[in-house]
Amino acid sequence: MKVLVIGSGGREHALCWAIAKSPQCDELYCAPGNAGIDQVAVTVSIAVDDLDGIMDFVEDNDVDFVVVGPEGPLVAGLVDRLEAAGVKAFGPSARAAEYEGSKGLTKDLCARYSIPTADYARFAEPDSAKEYIRVKGAPIVVKADGLAAGKGVILCRNKNEAYAAIDHIMTEAAFGEAGAEVVIEEMLVGEEASFFALVDGKTALPMVTAQDHKAAFDGDEGPNTGGMGAYTPAPVITDAMAERIMDEIITPTIRGAAADGRPYKGVLYAGLMITEKGPQLIEYNVRFGDPECQPMMMRLKSDALEMLLACAEGRLEEITLEWHKETALSVVMAAEGYPGAYGKGSEIKGLDAAGRLKDVVVFHAGTAEEDGKVVAAGGRVLNVTALGNSVKAAQKRAYQAVDLIDWPEGFCRRDIGWRAVKG
Ligand code: AMP
Image (cartoon, rainbow, N blue to C red; front, side):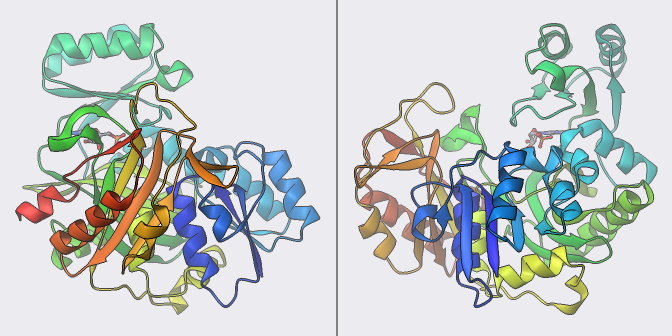
């Protein structure tokens, strides 16, 4: 079978690495890919938002199955176009992808189907939003409704911060159209974790749990990023808690989404707060997490291609998923300056030595090849991922590999997994 993966991050490298191992995979392409993906797939230089270019490539090369990594092309309707052309695709339709595209839409779904989540209200106009804040008080959370690259959420300790957040998002339009509407919600207290389920419209198959680290620096200090590391499983989600998440959150979501004319297919990534009252939904993402996907693919024992195909073809009922019992942990190495301005083009050495360590894979994110050298080409550049018998063991091995990588222009957090290690 000919498979095309869409994307260029560590998530897509991990997907390509896992799919390439499948006996069902005859040819693997990735658009646009990166220097690491180039070692396991044929990379083609088509941007993820060039839907016409992707459709042409699929047709010209008789691609059988397309796996969409990032949310952008999902929200733009790539899966709808592929399916209309008779091509199998992994990922939700544009209508179902709107659950990530609009936070308000997800909150309304929660309200209609009694899915536990923070109390909230939606506003399209700044004065009424401020009046709501005046009445509710602080702490309070102000969110741009649309996609804002993970930066549209402002946690406000007092009312003045919340008013300023409304000005920033709505009046100054800091996130453009994404901030035309806001969601204002109660501040939840607890431990955050992620829960992933595969959904084929009818069946929801739980995958694994994970925790990521959004802040740029050790001790969760500094600005928020796309994610500086992750590990799976997340000890805060016990088996009993996972059952509650399926019963109270995932299953009613699947039923509700179908009833609302947005039947869900693909991976459903629930961002959760585990509170004293139980699990509460913070948000849905409609694709694999990046970097969570990287340790997830290392733990997956089952055939990844068969798993993704079964999901796309509505056959999840027929399959079971097997996972390594070990913990997998991924450390993100980013370019100095990220998430602000950063340089490109610096050479990265030592990748082979790091990758030769037992149970270590170095997934590439923002890398490119220049004259036979691997160079940095993005903000988040490498995902050094390791398996171990405990979070501590996986952490130790991942940092051993990090220390073999010679890249003075890069940095990483040194405490990925701290919550679980502290125990
Ligand atoms: P989101 O983009 O909705 O996942 O929000 C980004 C981050 O903001 C989350 O990962 C949480 O750390 C935090 N957050 C969002 N909503 C809330 C909330 N209601 N209470 C506390 N923290 C929140």
